[in-house]
Length: 167
Image 1 (tube, rainbow, N blue to C red):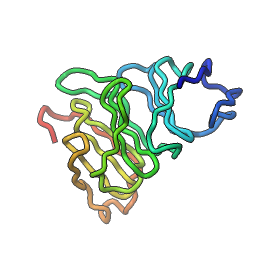
Image 2: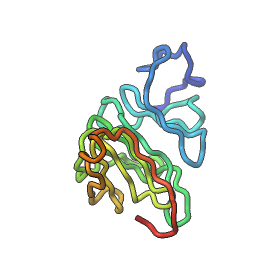
Image 3: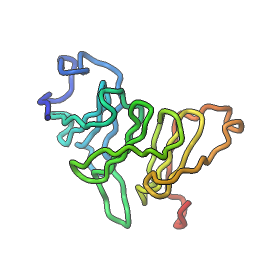
C-alpha cells in the first residue's frame, strides 16, 4: 500500500502528514534514501520519502523509537528494523518481512534504540529510566544500568565499537 508523496513537504495531506509536524524518523545506516517514519502508524520509504509503504506494527499507535539497518558477520542488512510502537518492541530482519513483536522485552515504551554497529543482534533499548540489552535479537534481555545512579532519566542510548572484543 504505497502512498505517492513526491517528497514530504508542507502541502502533504496524506494520513498524518498534514503540514509540518514533528514525528520520529530514522535514516537507514547504509542507504540514506531509505527512511522509516512514525506518525499515526509506521511507514517506510526506499526513495527519499517520495513513496511510502505502511508497515503493520501495533496498529495505528505512534512509534516512539526506531533503529534501521544493521551489520552481522561483516555483512550489511539494510532491512533490519527495530521499532518501539504502542509501548511494545518489534523487529524485522528481511525485506518485506513481518515486524514481529519481541514479547520478552521487559521495559516500558521504548524511547530510544541502538544496535551494536558490528552485530544487529546486540541491541540496547532505553525506556527513559532503564537501559536493556539483548545479545540474541530480543530473545533474552538484561538491564544494564542502575536507575538511581543515573538520576532516573535516560532518554537516549548510543553504541560504538571501541574494541575488538564484544560486550
